Image (tube, rainbow, N blue to C red; front, side):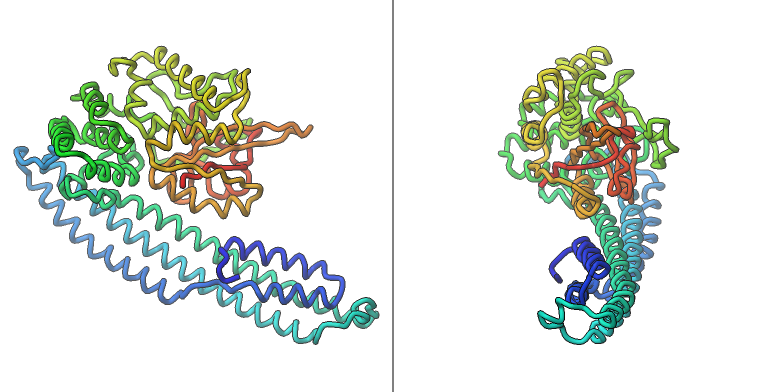
Amino acid sequence: MAGESTTQRCKALGDRLKDVREADSKNDLISAIKGALAVHAPLGDPGVIEATGKRYQRAAADSNQLHQDVMTVANAGLPDVWTGSTGAKAAEVVAAAARAVDQQTTALHNGGIALLHLADALRSAQSQDGTARSGLQQVLSSLGGEDGWFDDWFEGDDEEEARKQAQQAAVPHVDAMLNAARKADEAARAAARDLNKLASEARAGKMRTNGVTAADKLVLAETSGANGPTELNELLTANDMQRSGEYLDKMNDKDRADFEKLLADSKSPQERAYLMKALAAGHSMDEIRAFQGKIHGKDPQWLREHLTPVYTEDEDRASGGTNGNGSNKNTDHVRFGTAQWQQADTEGTCVASSTVTARAMVDPLYALDLTGGPSGQENDPEAFKQRLLAEQHRVHKEGDGGKNWDGMKPDGKEKVLEKEVSPHTGADFDYKKMPDSDARRELLPDIEKAVADGKPVPVGVEGYDKDGKRSGHAMMIVGQEGNMLQIYNPWGTTTWVSEEDFVNGHMDGASDNRLPTAYAVHLPK
């Protein structure tokens, strides 16, 4: 049992608790108690974890002085004549450095807090488990050895009374072990979530090529879209930084020189970042040259509107309460001008529609084809709607979707994801069923890590009416902050839902009360 996950231990103890309560013979009770004792206690050394957390916090305190030093340089005024290999001006570098130091300080501080919380929770869980385990061992000892075949077959009144007393004594001990396991499970998942997120935000270090200076990597990693919270709208994900560096290292000398010139000639950090994102998406130099010709010199607002479908406008992640149909009131529309990135109302193309938007999120050339048309210069919402609808129909047919715009089956969904999204993220997809809350809880850290790295995660949701008729829908998990998941719904919206709502079948906040339960994801490998 030691090699099993915390979630699996919780399930095992839950099963053993049921066995203890339902045991109708001495031998069954002994077997159930032994099964509970065989489940491993919460693992880990709270002292070591706590010491590491305190080191992180001391390092965060040291970073405050570094921030002050960087800001002194930034405020002193810098000449615009200095440029790095990507054309990043000195002021851009210093501003990016200041933000990076802020993020480093926050990361170290929050990472320390996550570890300290884990240490406290684990220490408490181990103490609770130890006390309960000792008490359960005493109950087991009081039962003596197992009965032989005949004795087990017949239970006298005195034996029945003794067995029931032992059951009453054992139940709270197993229940306490289960609560301790749950406490350790929740703390471990929260720490994994927070540390994975902090690691993904160290994006500059993901680009390991020597062809871009450290200063330019920093500027690229810290560049975000126009307006909105900076930390929620960085243009290059951890996956983008890693893949663009790998593609740079594979280029021949001519292509590399040409690409570096495109970067150097860019008019803004955002333009440079989108060129790097195009490279990360796997496009050739000919395609990137044509792309640069369409976006060159455009202001950051134009670039965001044409190249970034899903944009987070503010930091408010509360539900805002619910509407009459169960959906969250705090819902953002995903728009290009007055048109939304959404499926047609009367068509069951949710898989195709969410896939199209996911591809546009990771491939700026594809996004521009849809928003800007063949020239890349259009701003016509109606023309965009027609192009978007045509793409949704193409992908629906590609995945063998229903002829009357009925839904797409899981194998068709995997087919379109592998063809439309995988080439631009480098990640294939595994179909994972989530039949219950335990399965959803078990997969949550992997889902959150994928999203934090910049790989959208398709999620299927369903519900049943009072007559047992099923409704199904496909959405996309596109963001994660703290204990909240950002959901793109191809009805043209994004909404934040909590981890607990995801786990416990309350996804209706991102859709409506017909579709409360997340039943499967396609997890990027």
